[in-house]
Image (tube, rainbow, N blue to C red; front, side, top):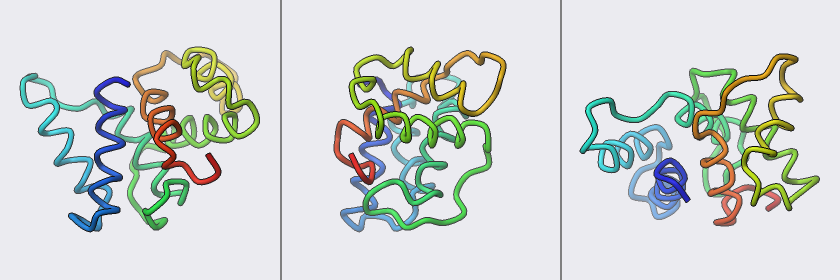
Length: 131
């Protein structure tokens, strides 16, 4: 699990424990802590993936809502969850999962940017509904 996967799991745990009710606040707080030693801070792609899954009601313990500003990254993450529902063995193959998920969303290839770390980490932790 990479830093973004860790951020996703910790963010859900914060919401589930009642420490905060907002997945946006949880993500901001956790990523600010995890990336405090970098000059750039958290990337927008994994942020969109996490908040997109929350927005769609796919994360256990988080109510659907208006959380995400990135439709593309949300779409990739949601597609990846659907793929994992059909082929759970791809949880151990992030690049293969990425290719299948992106192909469901668009015709041209896109370079991954930690979106699958978020999806797979939540899946492995049991935080994705249906996992």
